[in-house]
Length: 69
Image 1 (cartoon, helix red, strand yellow):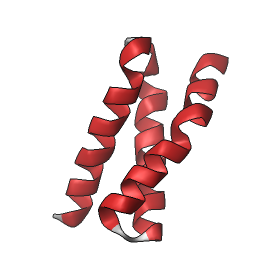
Image 2 (image 1 turned 90 degrees about the vertical axis):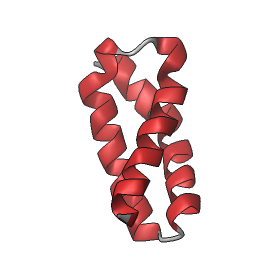
Image 3 (image 1 turned 180 degrees about the vertical axis):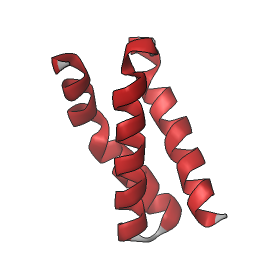
């Protein structure tokens, strides 16, 4: 449990920044960030620790595209 919390803390700013730049809307970026971090919480055990950053960027991009649609 502690490991996933550290991962979330170390990446939440990057997820928010990516979403904000993609959407140009703070509220939407905050919603996307929360959604992505919940997904990270749920799938953390199955992720390769060396690929977490790439996974987060892909999931964040896809969540942003869902908001735009």
